Image 1 (tube, rainbow, N blue to C red):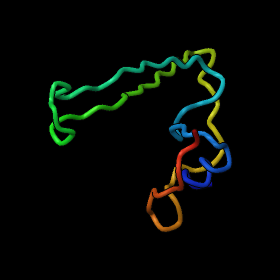
Image 2: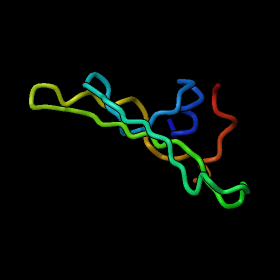
Image 3: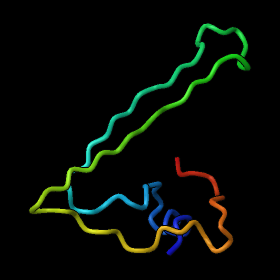
Image 4: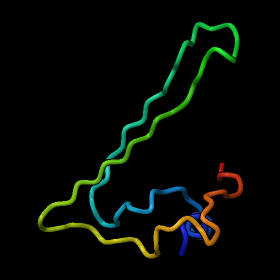
Length: 83
């Protein structure tokens, strides 16, 4: 199943290489560039999210079902993200 179709089927945005059944931690931080700017054109605000998986010799995790291609046309366009 292509990545975009998998997103729709699971109703969640998750990197296709993330494995099931192993410890996964995350780090979330805001990104502010020039927050003192009085114009929106001179500033940027966003959120950075990193996922870290911790496989070991006993538990390497289990691959999630499906392939990791984008879709039949090669584009990664999808509908709106869930709330």
